[in-house]
Length: 339
Image (cartoon, rainbow, N blue to C red; front, side, top):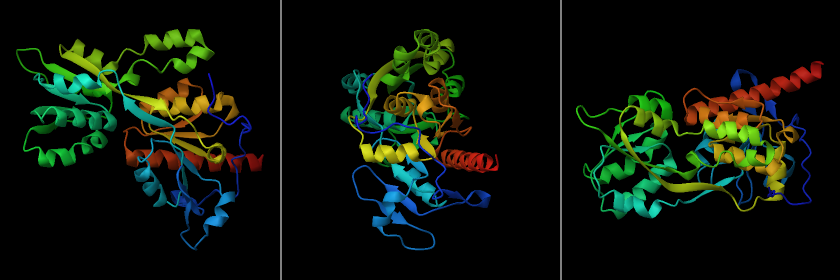
């Protein structure tokens, strides 16, 4: 599998115990706050003093944020409130899936539920929904973050768009077990989803371990679809978008990212993109903070060791997991110095 790295860039394990990354007690982190995206010059701030951008070249960011371009601002701002420095390194991008063109026409059919399990799936659905002249639909979402995608559209929808269900826990398994069903007749569900939800998690393993791949594929039956079907729902799934690695990664930014103590990832696709960059989990042993359990499971399957995630997916829990990972990083430094 081809690497996105520049041939001249070393992939030696980074020395992550830099004195520039310091932890204060009670969960607060102190260092100049470096926030750099992949297309601009660095912005630097400090809680106690002003630092010029020319001094940032020696700073090691504490956290690398990896969502697609334009979608890292929330997590960066949330981390800034805790004095945590971030480096933005988009690893993935979205593209239309094979069923995208079908979605608008399918919406001419009435469904009891439209099930949306990610913000991107929500954005793609809204695009098709508007193209279909905004028919009346009832939507179930996996969690609060996905629900927020619909807030603006609902304000102008005049009642034709209604987010009517969110499960008690933001997972596909719980959604499938709790979605209300019709009494006396079979309920119909339209499930616009990512092509990645069921097909490509095994790609990395294909190169490394065929036995693991085969076992993994057996477990990759879509939990949501299977759970709903078992309860008697009639499910139509459309693969409306897909997630692909970015075409290239800046070598200097990647070198900084390799040195950062914590990698923050929000999807299995981002984990796989990172693994494709480093080629071998043993070459990089720092900490991974995942937005939820699904992403964390993918990280562990791909060989990453120090993986943290919140019980409930979402921004607040993600920040807490990042702080927990940073704390573990600092504890490891203290422990190594004592030894």
